[in-house]
Image 1 (cartoon, one colour):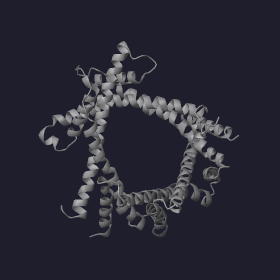
Image 2 (cartoon, helix red, strand yellow):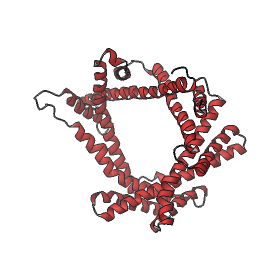
Image 3 (cartoon, one colour):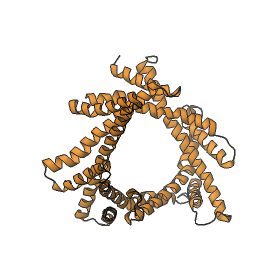
Image 4 (cartoon, one colour):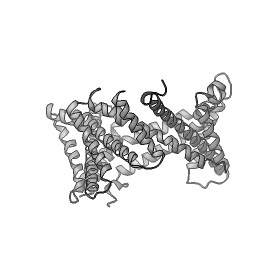
Length: 206
Length: 204
């Protein structure tokens, strides 16, 4: 029962959502919209479960005196956001949005920009034209890198044109082939999930 | 100076301190970011999903069908109990099944048919000229697909096509890499501009 009921729910939900595409009936659209709403509601609950798990793990680490200051900071930060939202609301200019604007957003952007250093150092170490494919990769990357710099356009417009041509044609051709592969693979996996062949979400129980 | 700018500047420097090496200042900033991000997501999901889509319609407007997702959502908490953990599979099954059902036509349309139709373009233009770029697209698409086709040995013509496919893939990886580096660099420039202009007032 522990496995059959979830498989049955998965089958019914999957078939319903698939079949509604072939119907313009208002009832089909209503079912589709309802299930999408339910999907988002359940997703929000999974987030709550994740947050509770995070709090539990951090409290466990604190009780074991493992990285106590950092775990405490994380927990206090987590609690502070709902508290600020509760006290001052979430409109622009509220303490909640102030913390987002002056603390969270700058740190997120900085972490994102940190990757520029790591990508640059990795490319210095890894970019070696040892074979024809490696040389093609190197040339393509260098052209796009240089061609995307605004300063390049002051000296020559042709490099910028070559960059856009590479991105729009040979690169796009390979991208489309990868997307077609992803599409076919996703459809196959979705079909396997609906039919109950792929059931890893049940932790592999048979 | 605005206190917000000072805090943002100090936190930016705390994150950049990782470039020297992993240190307590970076770890503290990282923990702060993790906590704030989770707290922010929690508030946004609570407001936009749980309040707007569930609690208000259910309790204020009497939309009783929403009891079903409420119960399914509450079942997710059974993951904390070893005996009842199987209950959490019911909402997961609904999410996965619905997601799979929606994805089949969507994938067929957006990822497969749309990509094929966009690639099939006339090789000769209306003025009678040969369109080299259209040839590159169709050759690149077919050769890359040949590279990913594993049901036949990559020998002879198939092998040559697959090899050409690897060249197109390398162009794609190189171009994507270059584009990604440029996007990261523009973010880096933005942060340095903030530090030098707003925080340190070195640039005006």
